[in-house]
Amino acid sequence: MGDILQQLVAAFEKMAGSFQLLSRHLSQQVDELSSRNAALEARLRELTEDHRHLLESNTELSRAVAELSRKNQELLQRQEELQRQDHLKTDFLATISHELRTPLTALKGALSLLLEEELTGPRREFLEIAQQNADRMFRLVTNLLDLTRLEAGGIGLERRWVDLVELVKSAAGMLRQAAREKGIQIQLSYPEGMAPVWADEERLLSVLTNFLENAIKFSSPEGRIDLEISSSPDEVQVAVADQGPGIPADELPRIFDRFYQVEVPQGRRIGLGLGLYICKAIVEEHGGRIWAERSGRGSRFCFTLPRHERVQP
Ligand code: ADP
Image 1 (cartoon, protein in one colour):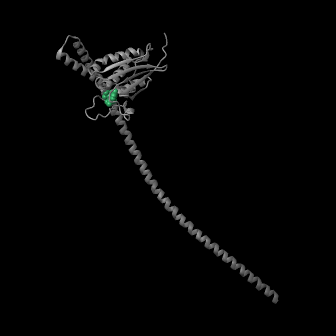
Image 2 (cartoon, protein in one colour):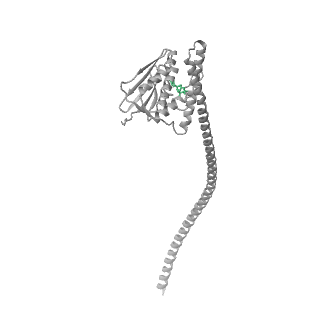
């Protein structure tokens, strides 16, 4: 009996020990779980806060998007309005320049007829001044008309087979007098037996006269202008070199831009800065290249035209 009691007591003591262990273990687990729970609650609070911020940012963003699309709409309307005004301006310029050309042509014709007569002294001088100014005005008006055509999509060429050497000779002939007045010589060189080019004769003539007029305008008196045609199997090249002040290297890439004129230190600019821009359009519409470079004592303006196979009828 005493043994059994002792065994029971020992068994209870063992059980009590195990209970104690178990209860310590459980209370550790409870502590751990409650600290994890506290961390999770803190994280949840953080997430709720983040979510609230996100909602606020989202509202702000939607407001900004709405504002942007309103501004975009306004810009589109303004752009449409500007395009409409630009078209009106181009139409107006086209009409004005076209209308001005007709009386100017009549004026030029009348002046040429008068100058054919035997006139001397101041009368001839005045008429020549009037003719030079009528020519200048005609060129300006033609440049404006070409500008409007360019803005409407292109100059529009009327091509046929053109004898380039003859054309260059007649451009030089037209400006020989103006060159002579400044004591400038125009030297022409070209290869013999050149095949004709497929081009718009009138337009090419205006490129050549533009190059030559500029060369005369910028040449120092008693200078020389070299007008040179050269030819390769793929293209022909025309170059006009003068002995003027030249064009600063940093201005060269912009010289063919619309309305571009090189800064003049003193004095007024002459012209509209459209001549070379239109020359570029004409040459490029022919499929050629155009550029300016410094050459020795002045500038050299060049353009090329691609060669076309002439199909025999
Ligand atoms: P515009 O139509 O007003 O005569 P251009 O387009 O023909 O003008 O020429 C633009 C500018 O290029 C001129 O204002 C001038 O500054 C410069 N330029 C053109 N040709 C020459 C040249 N041969 N030598 C020096 N500068 C030139």
